[in-house]
Amino acid sequence: MPKVIYVGADGQEFAVDAVVGESVMATAVKNGVPGIIGECGGNASCATCHVWVREEFVAAVGEPNDMEEDLLDLAVSERRAGSRLSCQVAVSPELDGLTLDVPPVQP
Image 1 (tube, rainbow, N blue to C red):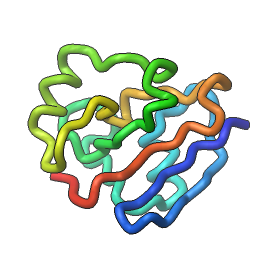
Image 2 (cartoon, rainbow, N blue to C red):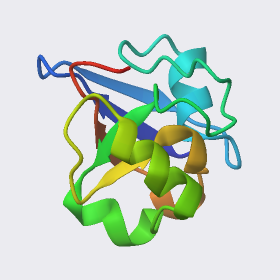
Image 3 (cartoon, rainbow, N blue to C red):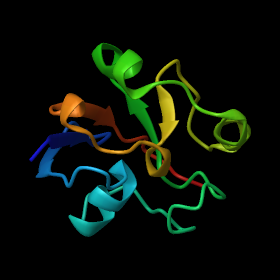
């Protein structure tokens, strides 16, 4: 089972086992990770699951599509090179150890 590591704004880490094929957002919500709200339930319509993918995982996670790009522009926290909506990132075996920073504020 791949592990996903969420790092809060305060530096606290939440390492959770994830199910392959499930979104990184669903994994966070199911495991009570603070700061990942997922108001729209993973339908890419709110940006309340914005995360910053650590540099070493950016290529493996891939680029956001056009709709996600638009939503990221509306995110409250600053947009960075590794910004993604966690509802649009599917867990895969290749992402074992995926480390994400959770912004201090979501919309």
